[in-house]
Image (cartoon, rainbow, N blue to C red; front, side, top):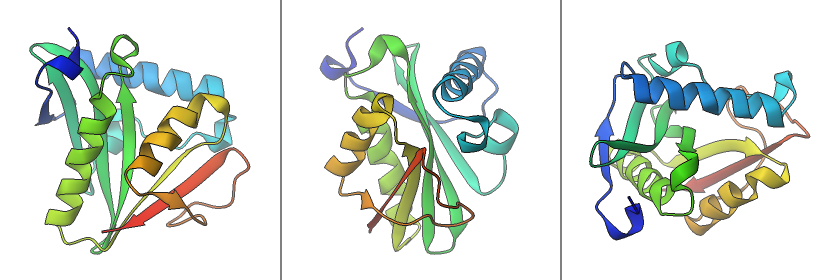
Length: 158
């Protein structure tokens, strides 16, 4: 399936399905391959199930394409978390659709600001470019983050 030529469905997800569990395990594994342990800020399934996190999956028919989450840092500030596209569907608009949904929800909640942390290495450049295309700019660490040579912090006002 080519999501760019089909409808991508974005659903709220309870993280119980085997497909999303496998995608998140692959995501965590990949983050640990790319970054030192102290610089991996990806959330595991238990942390994604916390009340301050809303989690979505992207689907093309019955095929899982990707995922993303919104974490509430304060009543006016949200954080983009767990953005991941399955390897088979990269470059097909999945992350763009998920990020659009996250921003839409942040606006519905009347957040003033939406921020994120991503990696600094070359493997993260496509993600950085995606975020920049949505108006995110680099910023200082926010929330509980500290300055980290392996991280890029980005934010945008809503």
